Amino acid sequence: LEKIDDECDVFGIHMVKIQDPQLAKRYSIKTFPALVYFRNGNPLLFEGDLQNEESVLEWLVDDDNRELADEIEQVNDRMLERLLDQSLLLAVFFYDDNDCPECEEILEELEMIDDEADLYGIDMVKISDQEAAARYNIIHTPALVYFRKRVPLLYDGDLLDEEKLLAWLTSQDVFELKNEIEEVNRKMLDKLLDENEFLAVYFYEVDDEESTEVLERLEKIDSETDNMDVTIVKMGDPRYARKWGVTKLPSVVYFRNRFPSIYRGGFENELDVLEWLRKNRYRQPELNVFMYALIAITLAFVMYTVFLIYGFQQPPKVA
Image 1: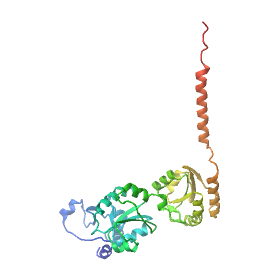
Image 2: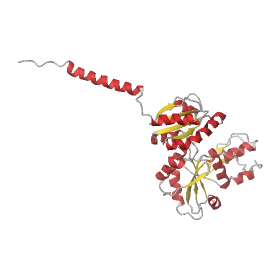
Image 3: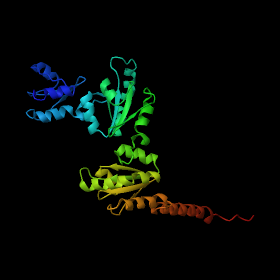
Image 4: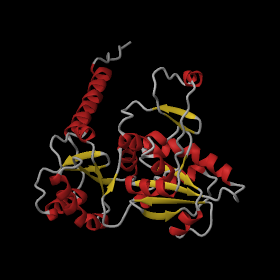
């Protein structure tokens, strides 16, 4: 553990040792030695190999282990850089801990949307470091900066309005990057399907060479699809792809008012995909089999009702 002590200090993690069985019992520690990680007083027991200092360090700096429910994680400069390398979407609250009377109230508002933002794949942290703020051209604090693949965007709205904050963070206009297909999770995709009449989703396998090559080709036509008012996003979730009938990856699915159409052609030429999207975008929506069946059943029901009403009607008796 002493081999990683200095490295832990860099990440703002203090390491101490204690020989107190009674205190250990309070935290349900039954076997020794044991390593417990306290985050704002909340304990987390390390269950790996204590002889492997590299795995211990990786566990300590893992963002999943540092997170607390309903609480925005405090980070230092080194940890912020690590998160910027790891997180596709990262919201960072810059503030001055020594001169910010309104920060406590702002943090309460941010913590109210932290869990919801996490569902959209947005990580949220806070940092009190003026040098780090200056590096990203932040002159005045407190400030909320949204990093999309390290590209920063400053929020210029009311930091005390959590609804507007969440709407801004999850806005399609905000998370989009030029000439790049954005990664989404299930929650974000569902939101985009609600907001967009036309949407194309590239389903792929993570760490797959073919998927990477196809993605590079598709990003060449991203601006052209924008001109057609077709938004393209990507999703590395094979199980969710099967929900829409996708059996082979990589694949492109075009949604028109949530109705999916799967691209059956090849990906050797991105222009073939563009032409397919253009045809689907500008063709008149056709009635599918289900809609025809529904209309037929409705007409049959109406005709049957009319027949019952008038077919068995008794003629009036002549007095």
